Amino acid sequence: MLRISPLFLMTFLLCACTGGGESPSAHVKQENFGVTPDGDSVDLYTLTNPNGVTMEVTNYGGIITSLRVPDRTGTLDDVVLGFDSLSAYTSTAYRAANPYFGALIGRYGNRIAGGTFSLNGTTYTLATNNGPNHLHGGREGFDQVVWSAEPFQKDDRVGIVFSHTSPDGHGGYPGRLDVEVTYTLTPDNTVAFDYHATTTKATPVNLTQHSYFNLDGDGDGPILDHELQLYADRFTPVDSTLIPTGELRSVAGTPFDFTEPTPIGARIENTNKQLEYGGGYDHNFVLAEHPSDTLRLAARVYEPDTGRLLTVRTTEPGVQFYSGNFLDGSFSGKGELYEKREGLALETQHFPNSPNQPHFPSTILRPDEEYTSRTTYQFSVRDAQ
Ligand code: GLA
Image 1: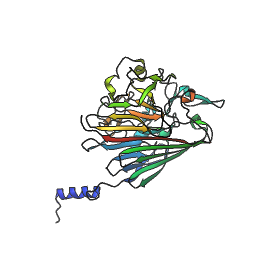
Image 2: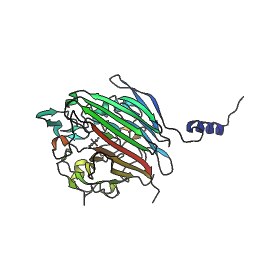
Image 3: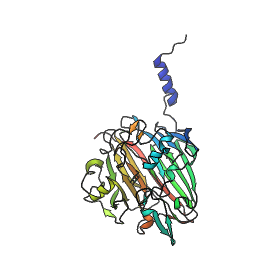
């Protein structure tokens, strides 16, 4: 009888996975992720780069379900909140509370006051799904769309092109909106999002990505020790329903000053009306002025224990920093309960409620224009200080 030693078997399996000791080559794996309550079959794509970084994404909502990146010792861990089954994302309880884990957001990321706006003399009414306001595209936002998906590999870059046509009038929005969003995982451990849209009628558009990060590893405690730097010296203060008042307020001397790296937990419990309204940080920051078609530094997040560093760049004028205040342990993903402030989101965007704030940068896309926007999340490490 042929006997194989466990050591030989382990070595053989490792070599098979890494291509004989060399770095793994970039590749995309596609598998079935289940069937939505509406009967649509959806897939899960696993993107792997040459460093072994993996990102799992489904064409249901363009949701990133998992993202494994190295710490300073090279150990990979999953740094995003999410679930490992489709039914967890489509359940009635999840949709009712919708924290938008990892989802592609549209047609309008963030809030529109009272779910209403006027354009060219017509008043439009949208769903109010967040108190009195419209949030993240309403009850049937892009986070619940089954997107057409085209995976690709170009040399050592891998990605997926998601496309979707939102019909004229869908959810109350004017115009048919043709949307294409490309997710790319590059060899320098960057995840890039390229957004493109065209419309048949003037309409507001504000697309973003709603991944929650915990650089310790998901389900591994609060993000309060993460050191955040925001390249913003102003933010948009809000009313009690989180609608901007219209003011662009200086962060100087306030708990909103992240111009130098500062632990998120350092001032989050300070007595401050804005922190009270947000239940913590849930505010749009005004990024430093800059030509709108090139990437600007928006944020850096550093986790001192693991050394993981996330750098966010964007062509957008703003970023919503949300400190996971509404997480309350109602959802457990990948075997972990997600409690308050166990994840943070950095949603690059135009400012909330822009359709009702004429002095904010415009979010109106017209039929003779193209919407383009780019955001990158780059993962690296820093040595211990
Ligand atoms: C955005 C909002 C938050 C919250 C989350 C989802 O970040 O600004 O208030 O609604 O989405 O829970």
